Image 1 (cartoon, rainbow, N blue to C red):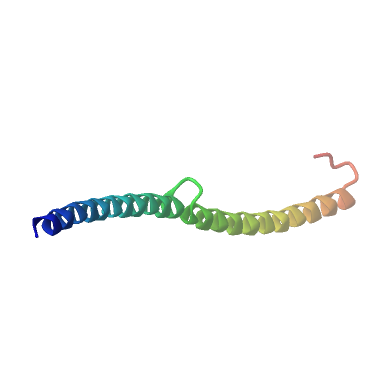
Image 2 (cartoon, rainbow, N blue to C red):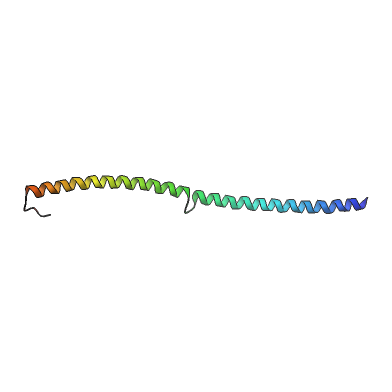
Length: 90
């Protein structure tokens, strides 16, 4: 009978050791996954940076359009003045 109990204790110790190792591996996996997700959301090459760059792109496109309109107005004014006064030199 004691042989059976001794064998059960050995199995119990090995299974608890496996359980502890499995738990440690799970904790390590969760920590690494958390770091990865944090980096994806808030890192240097992240989703937040992508959204900021997209907003900046939209702002720059609008700025280019406004500058083109202003340039065309100024060019029109320049041509009107040169056609009215041939001696006009900017």
